Amino acid sequence: MVQATLSREAAPSPASNVDTTVETFRFMLLARVLDEKMANLYRAGKIHGGVFLGRGQEALSASLGVSLRKGDVFAPLVRDTAGRLAFGEPILDCVRTYLGSVLGPMRGRDGNVHRGRPSAGILPMISHLGAMISVVNGALFAKRAAGVQDAVGATCLGDGGMSTGAFHEALNQAAVERLPLVLVVANNQYAYSTPNRHQFACTSLLDRARGYGVAGQAVDGTDLTACLNALRSAVVAARAGQGPQLVVASLLRLCGHGEHDDASYITPEIKKSAVGRDCIAVAEAQLLQADLATRPALAGLRAECVAAVEQAVATVQREPAPDPFAEQWQALSAAHLLDTTQES
Image 1 (spheres, helix red, strand yellow):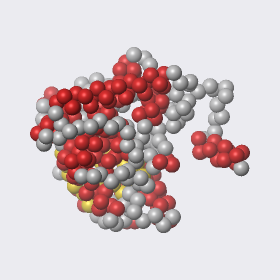
Image 2: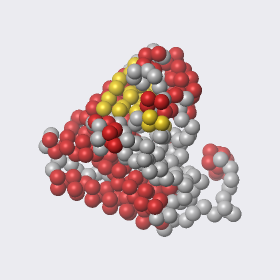
Image 3: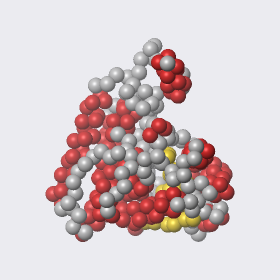
Image 4: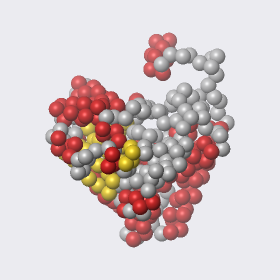
């Protein structure tokens, strides 16, 4: 039955499909609770800048995170809190970035989701859509040059981002070079507020994969079991030298683009359709039906997630903000090199 362990090293091999399903659900639920807390702090005026939630995308994102392992490269995007946690990012990294703590990975210089730890394989996000694909390609080229044979690079995108030039150029490069890239597309039916019918004329976004000679598969992004199967197979194929893998998931963003957006453009019909299902509710039903959890166990897990998030927020609220008069305004990488030089 569900046992709530809320930390994870960045890549142990799953003991079994059952263990992986339960583990992935933990990260889905933790991400939902963490996102909801950030939204509440935003509404209370405690967060400057935007807050962007992954509500409805947790099954897809967490499935990618648990399918990767230490030594891989992960470039998460705006709705990938679940994937970040599953890949090993601490809760504190998220809270410290949103609340501007000087102890965070970005030292209080960024107000929301552009955080990362490249040394741990988590790349800071570039907001320009499609831009992270070429960055991951570069990281994979670097690993190839260093003789690393079995590392995978993964990043995510929305349906709207597939219409950018950066997407097409970078996917073509990855295909020609047969890079072990896993590109996960959350087709949430809208590019911000523009519906699919005004974005592309192809029957399926998987047509883009065939056009570049890339392997692709479609998946129901609301179904945890389906997402796990699709992402695991994609990562295994990329790691085995089969070139880039494109996974396109159908789902719906169950919130606005950010907390500043009321999502009034999303029609009631699509909310009631299959893509409008809440992946958390679907996963809970799957766990109950398979006797992997009981309702009291699920309630206990949610309580543990809430406690972990509240503890992180309480910790960060006691931490200092950056002092502009004491801050060294060079790039973080340059600061690291400077520290290393001084130590030597």
